[in-house]
Image (cartoon, rainbow over all chains, first blue to last red; front, side):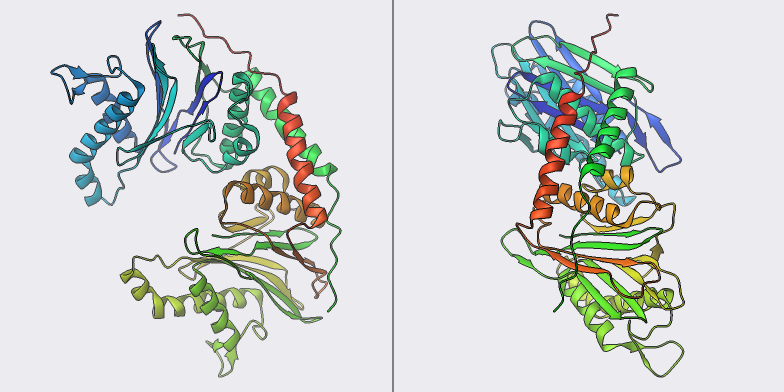
Length: 249
Length: 249
């Protein structure tokens, strides 16, 4: 499994992805799931993937090789699509192409065509955008009302995002809340694990301000996990016990 | 959807269930999902249900009518089974009987045979136990290593239980943590909602110490929700922002 979150805020974009993959609990490995397509000054696009690793890797390979453009003879890649919307369409087409090639055989082995991707970034002169692309190749987009999107094992880490992240949230505060969300997920689900990859892109900066890998033992992340745990403990201990008594009928 | 949690601790048993059912978002209703089978001084058994409402209600009806006993001519019910293990087997048999009657027709309408139950309680002279019964009629049991079981929409509320509930946790503290877990679930998933039913059974007491319905506007639950929200906010605000900088290669 996997957990990736993208946060599209007034100030910019932050994305976090874990690196754990597993085919059963006896086959666990580490693969990068956050991929950067960056031409500083021109475009910064980040793609995070979840689902069947063979599918996500094939989609990536196809995106790197390029796909026929719907309106020119050139191959279209994330390095030359003119807009983020076209980028999302391109990723959707790549997903549909892998579906066309692989889905029937996967089905014969009772495997679901399982893939979801987060695509975030900005192309010079255009808006900063964040999309989630589904297995059917269709996609939705984050908006100020719902400024974050998640893929993979999303539920454990959703409550803190629901509570704490707003469009106006400071970008690095949001990154921090995203890390808390990942921590909650890792504690409850072994299929999500360190290291984490993260990126921060300020709006209109046209170059990633931060790309970083959080390794096991990272002092800041350890400290964040400990502070969060201790504060939760202190908080629930400070809440009085339920005063309820059975109502006699 | 539904969220129910059972907590089997050194001191006793606590169970919480929400009451919301929905068939799509345009058909939302309130049904009790926590059912008590109590003969004070003799036995206290609580059954919480999740899944397709027609299935869970049919299972309940069958349990109330009684099922043929495997080793006597009497009908077996939760009021006369001799042990909690036999009670879990009885519930499993009821689930299998409804499966036999309904599953094929449900499948013809592309509906999954979706049901899970929590069965907790104590029969005089026997141990306090907590079981989770699956749609196949098989079941698992809570132990001191894993003192809580959840059914329904379980993931949103699992992180706080993972962090805070141990077998040695005070029973009413655990009830409180369970309520926090339900709160997290309700905030992230509309299919779980108030009122909540809860029960507390002290080990060897042979009568429920507490049965209570938390209605919308309940002052304690409102206060718990507010305190928890405010403390989470204060906590993540107190954690410093990530100090990460891009490593230049």
